[in-house]
Length: 608
Image 1: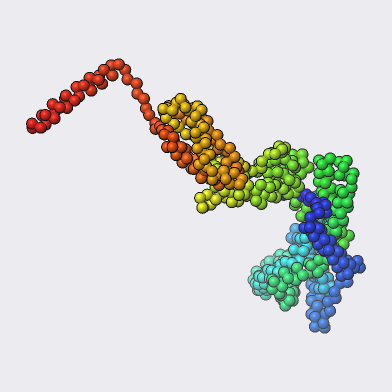
Image 2: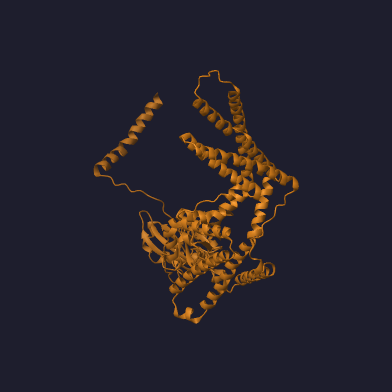
């Protein structure tokens, strides 16, 4: 999670038309919001819950059915009471104790059913849960209960239907089993005992057990439960709606009941945020802040102030939801804040680094020079978003999150330090001998017009080519060699001849306004292996960067012409070989005997 920091005071201190328009729009939005709040939501309308319960009116047929069911339950309870009295009066075995416990649970369930049917209230709401000791898990459960309750209400209807269907299937299965057991028990009861010698105690105990089993497997009560479940299922299915209607109704109820509270909490946050920023903007313009406090301390105060403003606005929103008794929205907001705090625990080191950079205490500071992706930039402003500037580039403004500067370094700016080696329209020569005019230069690429075509370089690659900017002025350096036959004239006379000759031939470049050639000089440079070398230096005005190659070609052409006019020889490369005395005498002998051998060989050839 990025640092929650808003350099919002700049909205009120910036005097640009865009900032003024944004401020006016914000003021109008807040004014309209508060007006709507006062007109449509008066304070008396804040409590949204209706405490008056709805009355369910029952018709005469339904009352008759309910009375019949209540009489059946009462009759069943009386039977259970009689059986309990009978079991308690005699000696109790383990089986009797278990039966007493089952009867008591059944009687308790019948009491709940009687109350639920008579009062027309769900059985779940009649069951009271015992309160235990509260712990942090219970506190969390209580906090999330409104949200879970809202989800519970959305899915309540399908869950009830599924629960009732399951209950009906189980009851039907139990009724079938009870009917089969009842038939078996009835058959055993009707059958006569063939053995008359059986003890009367055994017969009495046997009859007692049979009576208990017949009472246990009486399906009357199960049929009653089955009818009640089917009635509930039918009533729910009669009002059954599609999933779209359920979701629509849920969202509609949410915004109908919670929308006002959400609107009030939002307007509280925005209104208080706007007021506190206005107050801070007014205080920030006081001479005390601008004159007596240095820039780093002002930046620290601005950072802390914005964090406090955000904290106070969030706290005010939570208080407004608390006063409106909207625990659902309050729980959602608190859970969201807890989730943000939990996920940001691993980002605290990065947040601290960002805070140091924002307060101008890090390795990158405002007003200094930084190399970003191989290109120099000025750190114009540091805030939540950092602004880098290079005025020599087209679109040379970069806005980035302050976190991008972690690990970067800046240094103070040197006076008259260039920010880029060229500008649009300049003529340059690169290390790869590319020559052309800069058509565009951005942070991403530089485009050169090169011999009627365009050549593209990534900006970092362009800088690595060490561009030579001809439009800032340049000097042509031409090396020219002459034969050693003019060795006596090479120091003084020959340089003058070439200088005057070039001036006479390059009059076209001198006649331009301003002059293309600012200065021309010819010097004896060195004595080479096979030539005496001159160096011609021509200083050219930077306005004529496009004449680099034409002027170079013309200068070389006229140098050759001057040689032709003055009878000067341009040497070619020569190799001198030194021979020993033995090799020289052998070569001389070969030179003398060679012609004779050739003549005798030619005679033999003619004879043959």
